[in-house]
Image 1: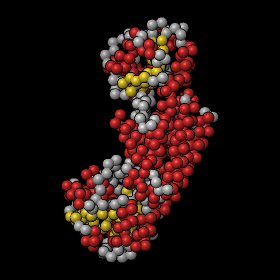
Image 2: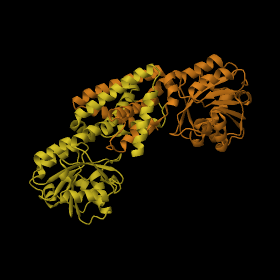
Image 3: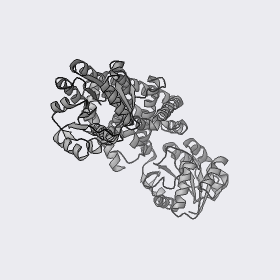
Image 4: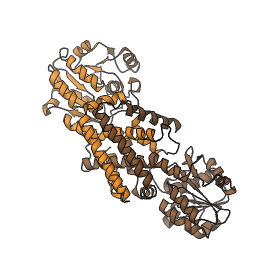
Length: 280
Length: 280
């Protein structure tokens, strides 16, 4: 690939650009974003040029959609008349089923391959972009069929993902969304609910009787709603069933607490927490 | 104070000993623990001597109980015949009402002052002891009455707490336990329940589709049950009501999720999570 157009040059889009450059990419990186973001992306050295969406799409071998999910859903139908037939469109949205479905319905003139880098930071924006953001991190790809991975454009993209240090793995869009409902969306909601519960219990003024563990438990609650609104809306059913399952575990935990018989919960919890770290 | 006897020279007891020495304590520190722990405590430079409980208690100006809660509850009644009348007995247990009540009933010949250092580490044992463990951390004291703080032994102990960098604060034993049910015990159970829920959902084999945020959410689930059994048993009613309140927040969250109306939850959660960090 020679020309990469990144739609949404924030933390993920900017980091992808910096990672490509660090890995030796010699082509051109074009940014499509608001004027303020484009200025910041230039300052960060992430992009070589900035163009309106139509021109950026028409020039690109790879179109990388790193916008919020709702913007990706809006962008996809607009791309179709602009893209080159041999181009690849991919995205970095945190839910996949809706995006892949939208691409299937509306992006007909070139290939689409959904993606989700399992990487992030507490701070958003291209000024926090990091060429090593993907290094050693998993990067989920959700092809509609195996051969989606064997086109020249897809092979080229995947090779660059490996060059920037990402570990690619494959799921269906539905599998992806069902899993992240438990591994990402539920953890977010457990932290948000804990923080909201503390706020309600102490009327917003937490007494200073807490230790470092509370920081771990509430870190995710700092996440801005603007990112989560789209995630919650596009994975609502799976998240609801993860919440229901979590609540039923807590209810059984109350019964066990009354019986002073919580060992099994702790041991099972510790076992999978350790396994997560081993596989980290 | 000239002689400090530490019952249970683990992470907390060992760190208290190292912190005293670092802060210039010139007296003698006696350890009361199992032979293996005593050997490790000597190796760590935490103690000057090791004695059986009776002799260690009889010599001490300060008796520092850093055992598990159930052991503290067992030790308190035994101390009474041994202690010097001008000595102070204190403890570092994570719940306070039961311990303070037990001391009131059984420790009659010298003063008792309950304590709870809001400090800790992922790893237990005197080999992880750290002279800076209490530095900048809060240290709750639970006097039965104000004048408990004004005895010569208490004044001396509190001065040493300040010298090792701890920020002391006062609550009643009941207030302490009601607050930590929410700020410490509930966060532990939300993490343990999340890990147990993941283990059940994925039959113990979590697919590798998760990002760094899952590590934050499950870190506390690594905590060993042996510490928590005592905490859960000695604060059961308060923990049960914290769990009930948390569950009702999650249930309301499900309703809000269905209405695509979660902004308020996120904003309230983020506000208190930020406030916790500001007050950190």
